[in-house]
Image 1: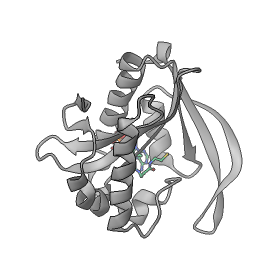
Image 2 (image 1 turned 90 degrees about the vertical axis):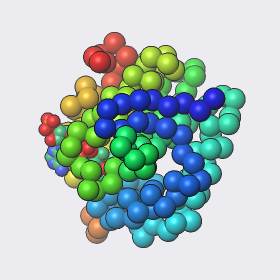
Image 3 (image 1 turned 45 degrees about the vertical axis):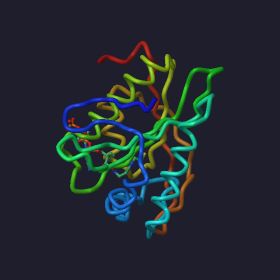
Amino acid sequence: MKIQIRGKKINLRALLPSDARSIFANVNDRQVSRYMKRIPYPYALQDAKAVIKKARQAGRKKIKTDYYFGMEEESNGRIIGMIGLHKISQRDQNAEVGYWLGRKYWRQGIGTEALTLILKFAFGKLKLNMLYAGAMSSNVASQSLLAKCGFKRGGRRRQTFFREGKYLDDIFFDILKKEFKQ
Ligand SMILES: CC(C)(COP(=O)(O)OP(=O)(O)OC[C@H]1O[C@@H](n2cnc3c(N)ncnc32)[C@H](O)[C@@H]1OP(=O)(O)O)[C@@H](O)C(=O)NCCC(=O)NCCS
C-alpha cells in the first residue's frame, strides 16, 4: 500500500514515473541544489527519472532504510519538492531527514509543513526515537527551518563540503521523539 500523508498546502506522497518533469523543473536550479549533498547541478531529466526509480525500489523493500516522499501541491497534485528519511536504523531507531523545495514556493511555510508531517510520521507511525539532519554552515534557510520545528543544534564537522570555491562546515541538528510537539 502506498503511503499518503495529508497536509494543508501540500500532501506527502510516493513518487510516480509521471512526476519526473515537475521534479526536474523545480530542482534544476542552482539556488535549490547548492546546499544539497547529493543533487547535481546542472540537473538532467534523467536524474529525476533515476531518483524516482530509486524511491520506488526503496518503497518495495521489506525492511525499509529510506522513505522518499514528493511534496504534492494540494491544489493540483504536482510535485514541488521532496522530503525523505534515510539511513533508517531499526536497531537504534533513528534516521536522517533531507528535503528541498522549488524556489518559487519558499517562505510560505511549506518547508515547515513538510517537516512537521514527516516528524509525525517518523515518531508516530515508524516509532523512531531520534531524527537528525546536517545543514551546510551558510544554509540559513534550512537551519532556521530545523530550529523552528524543534531540532536542536549540535556540533559541527569542519570543512566537510566544498561549494562555490569555499569549504563549508556541516552543522548537525537533531530532535528526540519526546521533544516533538505537534
Ligand atoms: C530549506 C527550505 C526547504 C525552507 O523551506 P521554506 O518553505 O522556505 O521554509 P518555511 O517558509 O517553512 O520557513 C521556515 C522558517 O525558516 C525561515 N527561513 C526560511 N528561509 C529563510 C532564509 N532564506 N533566511 C532566513 N530565514 C529563513 C522562515 O522565516 C521560517 O521561520 P519563521 O516562521 O520563524 O519566520 C528551502 O529554503 C529550500 O528548499 N532550500 C534549498 C534546499 C535545501 O537547502 N535543503 C536543505 C538541505 S540541509
